[in-house]
Image (cartoon, rainbow, N blue to C red; front, side):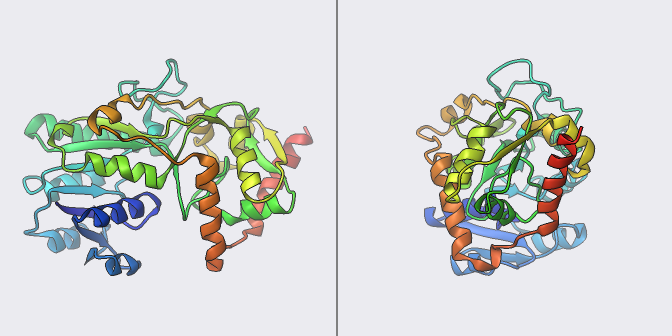
Amino acid sequence: MDILMIGGTGNISASITRRLLERGDRVWLFNRGNHPEFEALGANLIKGDFNDVEGMKAALAGRKFDSVADFVCFTPEHAMRDWSIFRGNVGQYIFISSCTVYQKPLKTFPIREDTPLKNPYSAYARNKMASEFALLEKYREEEFPVTIVRPSHTYGETKLVGAVLSWQDAPWTLVDRARRGQEALIHGDGRSLWTLTHSDDFAAGFVGLMGNPATAGHAFHLTSDEVLTWDEIATIFAHACGAEPNIAHVPSEFIEENWPKFKGSLLGDKAENLVFDNGKMKRFVPGWQCRIPFREGIRRSIAYYEAHPELQVVDDRYSREIDAIIAKYRAL
């Protein structure tokens, strides 16, 4: 197949790109060209800026693809940009949404694809929902071949795991803290259930959906069947770092109120019991299942960082912020 990946070099998309190339697909990456290692593996680069709509249209004019997956589409405006570019010249358009779109607070378990979409806490979730609605309307109106994929918490070689870890933070800081015996900040009482999916497992399912015309108009979440509490996650993480867990519990509401960058990410996501029914994925991709347990996957991630010293960045400010939240709560 001829496949276009918009982005294609991030935590999730890099695993997918590698798997497609191993399978023998012809893969094009539309991005700024900052990761030449994927070209060395056989991917074709279309250099451009996805924020430059006219430039993107010009770079892709006249090209047709069996499947297009956009990993950097976060708003309905971007979704409609993609629709205007790919309508009539793509066999399948995959929108990467998020499991944050599901109803919060949750009222039924486990989560299925027909669980209501409603998250009043997270602007990110609301933008993903609006994008889904806009693209599905184009599917209903003109059969635009959209397939929706909803990842939950996906980690991998270049992405570590933390209860209070944002994309702005240096993740190796958490490894450094664990090895120094410093506290791991966990929201709530640490007993809420969470699902972690390794990017290689995600890629296996995602590639299985690509090129399947029966997926048009459908939404799929794509997650592991392994379910852990946040205290279990913190314990496994500490052991992978060669340390013993030292956990500090602080209520989600307190963290969000006193640490604005996490507003909505706890009450709108991590504080819930996120347990998924993956039956629909397994019906559409027979034989697929996640095979990498967290205890193995996180050791792979830490080993990757240890093999790449340039990634071992410790953010002292982030570390001090963690300590400050814990101290402020204990001073109440």
